[in-house]
Image (cartoon, rainbow, N blue to C red; front, side):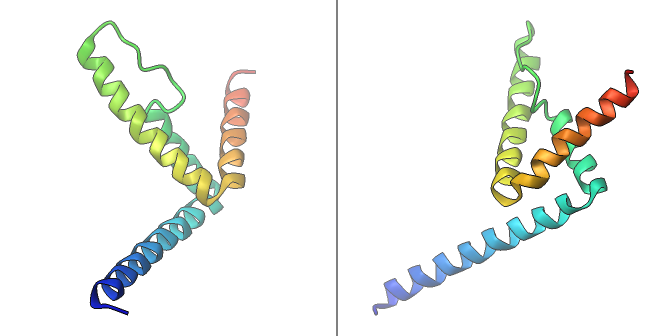
Length: 101
């Protein structure tokens, strides 16, 4: 194996380890109901489930940027822990239903 191949393999292994650790951290956070509430609040603030359109172009750009980040986080959560992501949404709907009987 050449030095370049060894360096590429080492870099690839470090990236895989980083991704695995990140997913493990997401699963840890989403395991607890309090963690799911925090993540849902963040996603809501990022307008993940809301339209970004606004008549003010600057506001629309800000909304679009926040939405993009929320979408990226949601995608990572769906890859790491799809069951907890679904549970988070259900819990949010249940909380909303209890607030608005």
